[in-house]
Image (cartoon, rainbow, N blue to C red):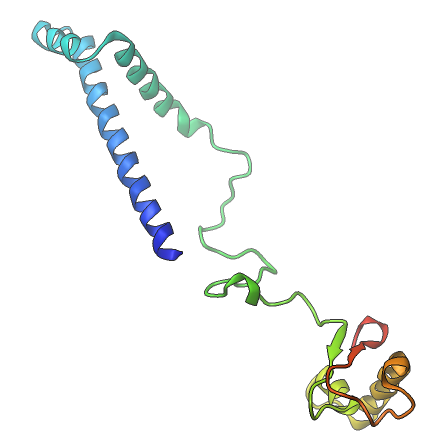
Length: 166
C-alpha cells in the first residue's frame, strides 16, 4: 500500500510539473503579446488560440492572488508536530491501534485467578490489602459468572470490571 501511495504521489507531482511548465510557457507567450514586439506577437498568435491565452493569463492572475487567501485556521505549529494527547500511529496497522483505555471486560486465560486479574489491573507494587479488596469487588461483580467458589474460574469466562474500573 505504501508503494502504491508513493507511486501515486510521484505521478501527481509529474502531472503538476507538466501543468506548471505549460502554464509558464503560455505565460511567456502572453508576455510576448503584451510586450509589443511584432515578431514575437505574430509567433504567439500563431501558436496559441485567444481563449487559451486568456485562460493562461487568468491563471497567472489567480496565482498572484492565491497567497493572500490564507485560511483563517492556519496555525504556527511546525508541520509534523503531533497534537497534544494524540496517539502515535507510525507503523501500526489499523486493527492493532492502541485502545483508548482499560477494557471493562476480561476474558479468563489458563492460569488466571481473581488475584492475578485484580493485580494486573492495578499499578505495579500495589499492596496485598489493596489487591485483596479488588479481588472481593471482582467476585461481587461477577458472582453469577464465577459461581459459589471465587477460587475456581474457568478459561474463557468473561468477567466485568467492578464499577467500570479495575
